[in-house]
Length: 294
Image (cartoon, rainbow, N blue to C red; front, side, top):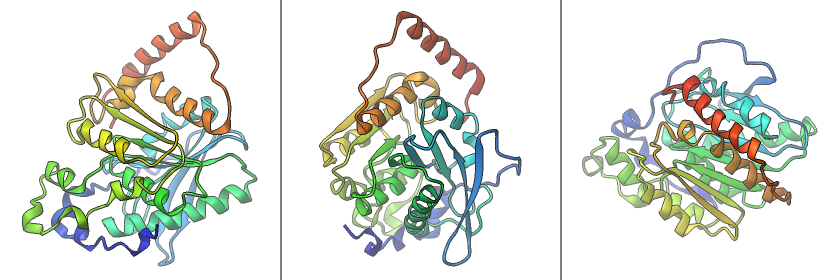
């Protein structure tokens, strides 16, 4: 599927961009231990900031696209947890976010995703990292993950969609965009359903039961249309759009770890009673430590 030929110009209407993107700069602080800041220079010379939290060289590599109100620096408490599970977590910003240059638009967000994917592939190879490469998108970032899935299905080991959306018009309306006055229809949207229909590799969908921005029915629609031969759908009870990771606790990371283990052909290990008790303690600690972080 050649997604680069799609016309996303309607999504670049000022009324849409105003509600779709909420860029902010980072604090300028140094990355935490075991994390590396990396710049991806686009063809126009604009730099996209990324922060890589790397596990060992054979670990699965998760290329992560965040939500519209987040920046990679927000994931400093999260990246090391991925590492504890033996996963490398490569978080990238959008134009205008964090330390990235430029101004974000829907069309450049998707076209940049192609350039980012190819650049990350080259970087992993140059660093001798041989683990499988997956794309993961949260909320708005699900559009980037599905864009790549439809375009590079043979080069990706799988995708993870967290709090993702199926249809564009309902999302924009939830964000208070008057889609009728803008003149945008579903055919002029992100086309996430068409894209997930093109991806047959392992697919993991995680969604909050009480998501107030992207209803769980949207995730169910993605699940129905997914062409993956191996696909999983997990609902997090009691959670909403911005508390899904906090409310899920260790379960959130275990779902992703088990998913990547299956991709690598690793059989799951049974947890002891003591390990299950630790899981409950971890869940409480995550809530206490992170509070209402978006």
